[in-house]
Length: 183
Image 1 (cartoon, rainbow, N blue to C red):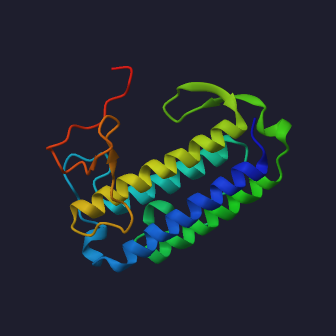
Image 2 (tube, rainbow, N blue to C red):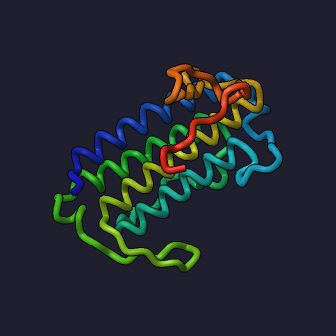
Image 3 (cartoon, rainbow, N blue to C red):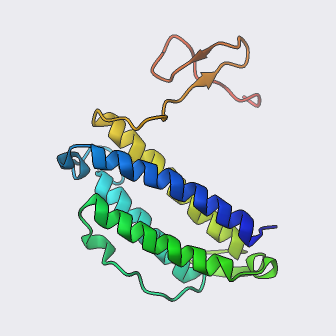
């Protein structure tokens, strides 16, 4: 199902997008990095980055990589520290991945989450799930940047309306959000 090359190229794509987001965060006023917004599971950009790196390290551990993170992630404060921790995590993930055969990536295993919940899936699926989790939090961070008045470039959402061919942004309430054909 998965090959190490496919997952590696997906990791490289996430790395590129994540580094562009970190570049944007470096251009923002530093006080916004720790600004807490109401009604968010992770109230600040910093708390999102901490969660992202901690969960990535935890999943690598669950996948059998017993290397300890090189940084005390919970204590990271600046963008440069987060970039360094991200690069160390990426090297760790790349090293683990490039040593895996297709058979190993397709091997099913029971994984136990910190909550105690268990799930059974192939190693490749767990790795891809981790990459999706990273993408999710990049989107959350981009949304927080937008709320703070510093939207990252190229993050506008464009809705293509299936019936009329017209388009609108979500802020344009004159057009309804697209509905799936099942509804």
